Image (cartoon, rainbow, N blue to C red; front, side, top):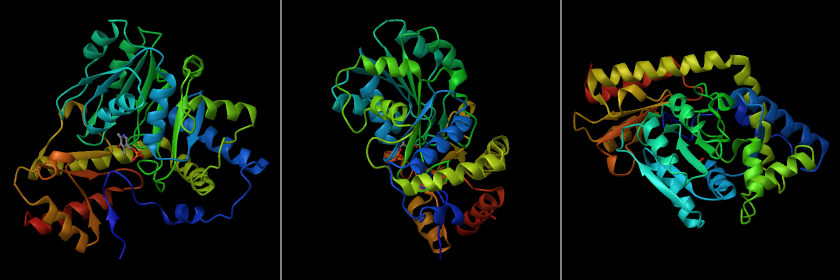
Length: 357
Ligand SMILES: *Cc1c(COP(=O)(O)O)cnc(C)c1O
């Protein structure tokens, strides 16, 4: 029996998309490989709402995050964190000897534009990292207001982690002034894990040219330059299997209609929020709720581990809370190809197990 996944990645992948992973190989220096990567980039530009270049990486999203902060910080990075994934940027900076400062808020709360303004006004920073959708706490940061602040500082390269939101909610990369917008295959894009993608603005290109030690495999400038020089190819050997599947899945997403896709995510989110309020409580500041996952406070003191065990026997899986919140919260992802019927079926099963009916 297949276990239906309601965890924030990896997500369930449609059977026909999975089949595309089994496409026979082509040479990665062939015209076909160029056409494949060019096609993917054109479609991703529509999803990202950007006219900038798109970079592919045979890695999970973490690789591009590390590459971004290392390749594009010339002076000092300001890392804004609202949870586990925000803080990861700071560790990347430390481990790569990139000067950085961490600005944290209490878990469950959002970054405020005032916080960002105050930090950038010091003039110490030339790169900012922010998490759009924090998967440990269910926060969707107010990026529209934050963008207005960041635009006041044209020397700042703006990196945005949209790993668990791109493809599930509208993100207008160019309008927000984001220079490097990063996502992974295995979340709202509904593909198997193993490939990450990002947008890479001209400002980021110019900055990277001034940074001497960018590493090699995750040097975003080398990914960019290779595309220009070799007509949409990848410097090393990419996961062509992922590329076949991604090309196909992007067609499916555009056929569904991005607005329809975002509406479906919002509707699923609303069902889960209403249910959480009826039976438990929502952990996250309700002004900034994520459209792709909901973090629920375990007000009933149930055993989240036991609930998931029983759900597993019935063919479902949800997530426990992140880190130290393992039993204090639990997380239900409603992203990728998840439908209202899937969510209702899951919630009905949880009610049945917990005797909430
Ligand atoms: C999953 C996740 C990551 C890490 O992505 P990988 O693809 O696992 O490397 C980073 N940020 C957020 C917000 C995530 O949800």
